Amino acid sequence: MITTNLEFSRWNGIFYDEIMTAAIIDRLIHHSHLLMFTGPSHRLIDSPINS
Image (cartoon, rainbow, N blue to C red):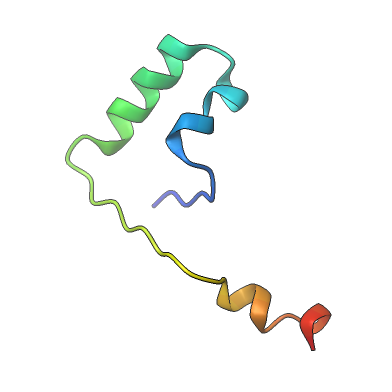
């Protein structure tokens, strides 16, 4: 399982090579299920900072 809050289009900022980034994403999502959650983060809402 891999989790991230970055969109795939922003992964070039991590790997710095567009071709390698595309290959990594292609291999990760091949035969995978992507779960995309929208809305506010429950972890952030329930944090002590927001209390």
